[in-house]
Image 1: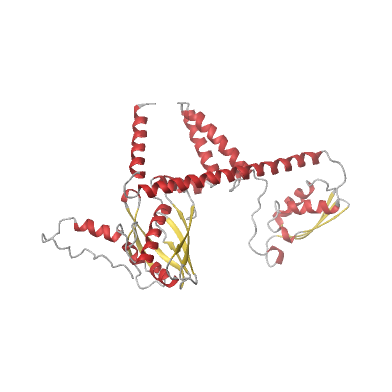
Image 2: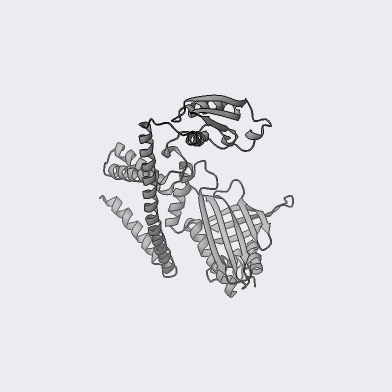
Length: 414
């Protein structure tokens, strides 16, 4: 191992040690890592069971298919009709509009169908084992028009794509892909050649695809929508739902009890009919990021929803549901989806640095819960730390008084 790699490894170990053994937040961060490891262990055990059942079922199905090739016994008409109906979805976009009748192995097809799908349907039905002949009584239409059976959003034909070409891989496909990717990555990393580097990178890519079960565009954020990463969180607050909702919708007060939200201000220009807000939040390495969001739904004491404006560096959207209880407590359910820079890979890197939205949301939700239950603003709230930082700097007029343009610290809501 060369000195440069040793230096990078040492720097990484040092940074991780400083982060996880920080006197102020180290214990909390270590607890999070411990909980994540326990959760990962539970998921791994469940995953092994799922892969085993999926592999067993596929093996049984494959064995039955092979045995059927050598079975020349006649097929019952009811069984044959079920086989034909099972193949309709691979050939047409409106399989429910096709009627199937079987008599002595002869299949009669009727019902409306689109013109370009009729030949494919006939070919699929002829390929079903036990079918002697096919009678075509289909009503062929060039366009859906006003035909009832062809209305509605057409379902996508899955066709005969392999398991590795589908958006969601089966458990068996994920297991095979993960093992193959890990083997290729280990082999490639041990070969200091261009081919070995390419093989190792390809193996890591395949391993990441199998581990996350995310399409490549979601994995790397290339051409993906804001649904690259999903985040969910539920908390229970010992405060009435009216108080919780009132504080939650008062965006401008967030910096007085949150750390990662620095500033929030309304930016409506008077011509818009929706609430538009400009947020300044703390990103990785303390970098401040700005984005505009709009409130897309609001129901008093029940629901708040938002989404970012186009052009935001990190596109995201979310909704918060509030449920009050007779004992005066409130359950808050948060669901957020976002598309980070570099997709899920960027999210994983940010997670390792403790700067991903889930980490930050967990931190700030705990501060909000504490603020609602105790009425005391946290000592590390953004407005307080920002004010202390500005106060430590020399005043512009030399008198020690705050500068006129400096904002005053907002007072926490009761």
